[in-house]
Image (cartoon, rainbow, N blue to C red; front, side):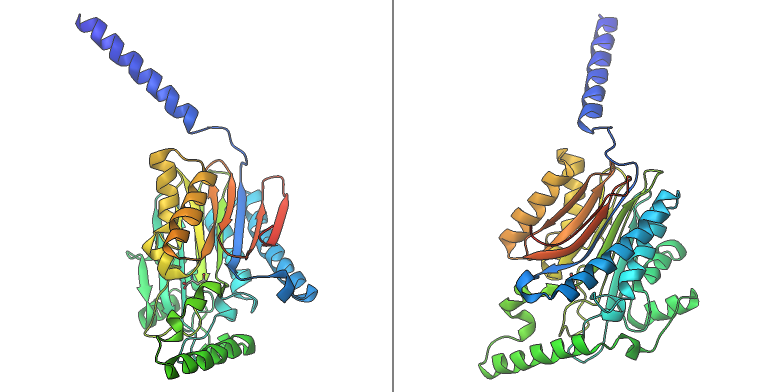
Length: 346
Ligand code: ASP
């Protein structure tokens, strides 16, 4: 009797293991792959010149090619993500590093984060004003400290001690971002004259352009890394921190599921835990990457009133762009080197 019971239990166990194997789809779409974004928002063809469009596409291509080459030659997804983000941080086109937006006090305060899907280690910085490449500071926090998130002056001191490049805050000045701040302040003044809330909470924010940058990579060893870097939102004040340095909101990576980088109205991404929720839906509900990203962005985030999008890449090399705005600067490359670059919805 005991023996029959033992055999019965064993066969149930074997059956359920097989079922799990099937549903987790061991088939790899790509041995390695990389996906990036340069922000989502009201990006419309009618407001774009051919030169501007070409400049964005060229920079996205330059950035993703750097990461792709690292992965192709057997490098780590951590290196691929960091070096790819450097290219976008060093360009004035994106709201990160050199192109960071201005705060209400006419300064630039940057946030960044990175996460390693192999061991769930993560690092982030918030409100840094003089670190040339905030994503590198985030990486140092992840690898060379006992912490996950450092902020403000302390984060800068740490970055300097780690040998990272520190620049004068004026390095981050760009005419275009300064003008955008003045325009918003003008609107804010009018709004305040009419006794309404400050422009930072103006419902028009939902139509903003969010120029944050992000990258997710899967390397040949099956390790996923995700990273995000931003200047935050124009006219932010009171040392506001968005979703980009928040692990689980702006960035998440887990080798068991996927890696995600977000861009959009940060407060909503924090409230919905966008990046972690995508991973959790895959882990606990056995959803595909596409199903999980679609539910979180088009259903949960949208219902709450949030705007923006994500890039995501799963452990089998499947990739997904999902956003509820008119456009998102984005690109992907699979292990064959096939490059996709897009800006608008279709
Ligand atoms: N998510 C960023 C923030 O709220 C903004 C962006 O994506 O551009 O700080």
